[in-house]
Amino acid sequence: MKTLYGIKNCDTVKKARKWLDEHGVDYRFHDYRVDGLDLDLLLRFNAAMGWESMLNKRSTSWRQLDEAQKNHLNEQSALKLMLEIPTLIRRPILDTGEQMLIGFNAEHYQKAL
Image 1 (cartoon, one colour):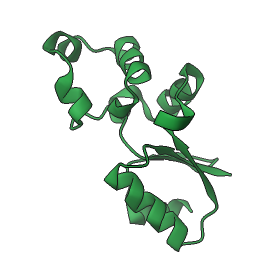
Image 2: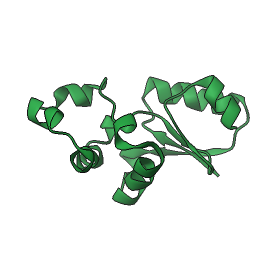
Image 3: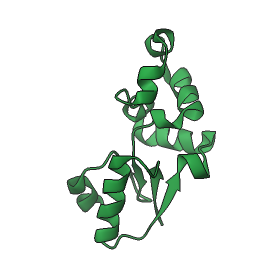
Image 4: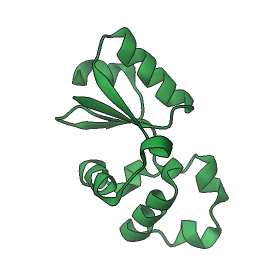
């Protein structure tokens, strides 16, 4: 079963969900705010994509961090922040069972599915 991770009110997540629905893709939606985010899941994401590609530096959550948090990031501190503030993770993440896609790109979804 494919799983789409994100937050239901995110515009990019809405686009991904709409695309998946329109293309008849069977998937489960995991909302970080409702279903939570644990360390095991975050480590799976990190292993597949790397923390640097997961970190959403364009988010409101990123802009609200203090400069010390932003300037002294490493893998451990970034993962800790993402666990505490899941909105720092780029959205959506689609786990196809074979690969993980971050963000929404219809062409990439078409190729992967």
